[in-house]
Image 1: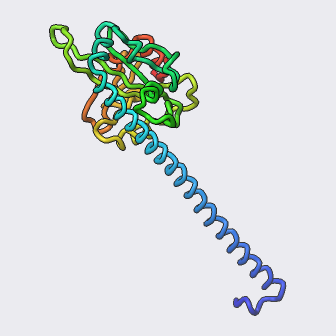
Image 2 (image 1 turned 90 degrees about the vertical axis):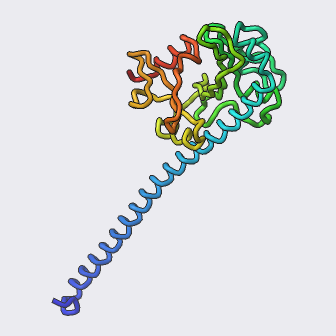
Image 3 (image 1 turned 180 degrees about the horizontal axis):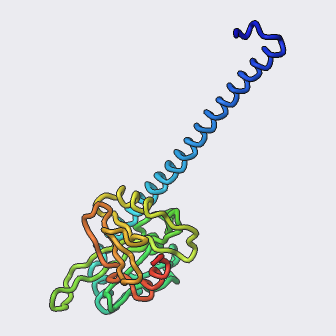
Amino acid sequence: MNASHLPAHKRRQRQGGISMAEVLLGVSVSMAVLLFAGRYMVQWQSDMRAKNVAEQFQSFQQAAAQYYLGNTAGMLAAMADGTGAASYCMVKANVTTGAGGTQSNDTTLHTCAFDANWLVYKGLLPPTFKATNVFGQRLVSIFKRVYDASNAPTQYAEMLVVAAQDTNSVSTPSYGEATAAAEIMGGNGGVVPDKDRATCKSVRSSSTYQVCGAQGTWQVDLSKFISSSQLSTFSSALPN
């Protein structure tokens, strides 16, 4: 039946019904767009965080390498037996005076570590450089002296830069976001997994703690770079 032949009140109901359907359709489309936009914004924010983390990390890494190259002899001695460690291996020192902070070396692991505060104090990073990333993780560079097969010290050192949980940390990145940041950094970028990720593992029950290149090009044992107490703190946060 053609709507024009309906009684007036029926035509109003039909027209009202059509109008309501159009409104509902419009709302559903708007909601779908808003929901999609919401998911897009979350992904965009995640991508931006990963980009910011990677760029900050790379700047710190470059400054740390430059600091080592300018202080190689002193740092190698600090890594060997702790000689002069207070002059090279410091974290959380005052960025203006270099005072305070904590000496960070290990004569058993033969390591020397420092953070962005120390590099700002030394003038290798600008005063505006933040010591922690967007997740509240402190950027720390760990240098480890290389020993040969006979356990004799060489004139070489390995470098591992980490984003460590600071006392003021309020959040941690998801594994996917951490991996995304590592991939942006290229071959040097890596990640510490939050559990057994097949190709890279952090498993408390088997004391397996690995750091792996995001592109699968390298892998190191975290226990070779941090102390047993630090490793215990890390492992206690693992799910297994």
